[in-house]
Image (cartoon, rainbow, N blue to C red; front, top):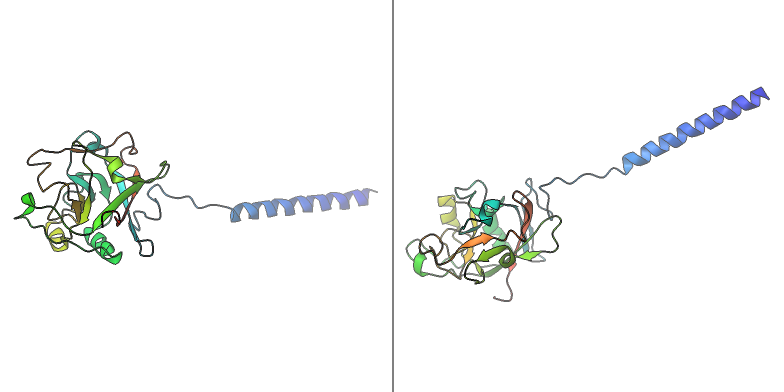
Length: 229
């Protein structure tokens, strides 16, 4: 009888160890890799720009600059290492050259009508571009007109101005400008250059009621605006 009990106890112990081992293996195979804070909609600091030619979209990683919730700026989105990198509502992490090439890849055509000489009397031309923004926890994807406030109540109408050579020379980092611009890759045809900083006819600020807090990573999504094309 004692021998039988000993065998039974050994069997139970072995079974317990087996179950524990299986449980341990199951946990290891079910470990989920955590997403870093800078990963939004398939872009990140490591890969800050993504082109989906089939869908006709360009996604660029950005970061909210809360300074411009209360202070006006003429910069919508500027690459962080450019000379204007800290002057936009959304700090971008893609280079102007990569953004330019991505726009061409989805079929947009640059207007190339802006120069420093004509900037104050000229409205930017080129393919109309739509800009949307979203982030982790956002209720939806927002149009840029929801997130940047024009003091006159006018719409921001971006166009693919082009300006790649000038953008390289000036190294401002400007992707999207809020008035027509001879340097920014896309800019707003509603106003001529200087409408914010020279004539003061308009002020642009970030909408703090909708935008997330300062420093939040966002995905900015660009596409051809077919309603205006």
